[in-house]
Length: 69
Image (cartoon, rainbow, N blue to C red):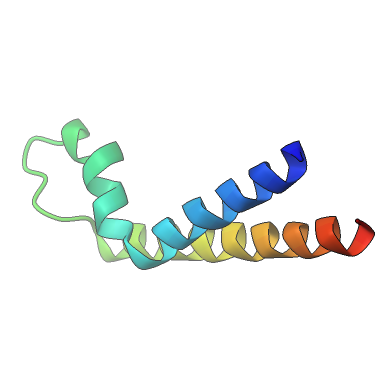
């Protein structure tokens, strides 16, 4: 049961990073800069790639969790 919750959480966070990287930036990084108007393109790409990886691992974990019963 704990594994399933972990994989669901990982999938949800991954999808957030994949589809809303600017929102994630506003929560986690904006306060660190004085003239923070928007995230850089590199930050957006890195966040989306990390989100894709988290989503894939979360979905794969759910598949394995349900496969093994």
